[in-house]
Amino acid sequence: MSGETTALARRFKVDIDTNWPATPPVWNPLLGITDFKPGVAPTLQDASDYDNDGWVGQEKTQQAWTATATYLRKKNQAGQFPVAQEYLRAAEDQFGDEARAHIRWYDRDGGDEAYEGYGIVGLERANSGVTDLDAVTATITGDGARTPIANPLA
Image 1: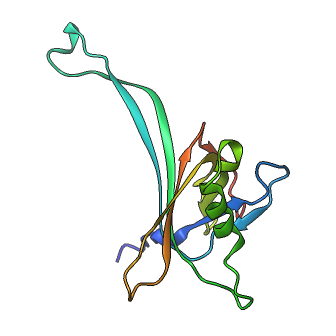
Image 2 (image 1 turned 180 degrees about the vertical axis):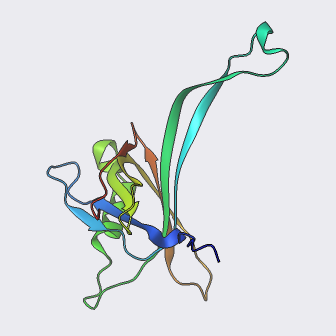
Image 3 (image 1 turned 30 degrees about the vertical axis):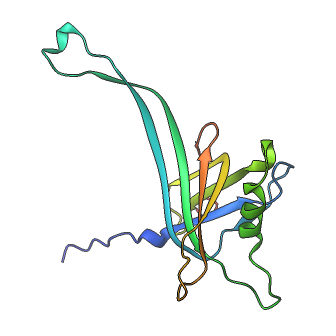
């Protein structure tokens, strides 16, 4: 045994600022997450020239980020869905700032991987079969930079 431990995919915690677009932020946890995929997609431009000996050259000219979370829709004892889930549901039908979410995600073990950003909210039902649990996939498509932050749990 090497003494190393593999990190678990479920180590990320996701919070939604349910006070956005007002300030200060009021962070509420996005509960019921079963899958979370943050990502960055670069825009590459061909930078090839005669000096590359036939090999393609590339330059990154911009990038975009997304944060996609699938979560179960669970009601509390009062019959209400979690605050962050309801915030995202309401934002999906809006325009302008009301269509955006202020999101942060970070390593729940206190690691260095922690980001926040603002983005447009899109929702899609993840499960729809008669025997399925109610689940939604929310995709926050970044509007501006994804910013590294200090981990709130560090």
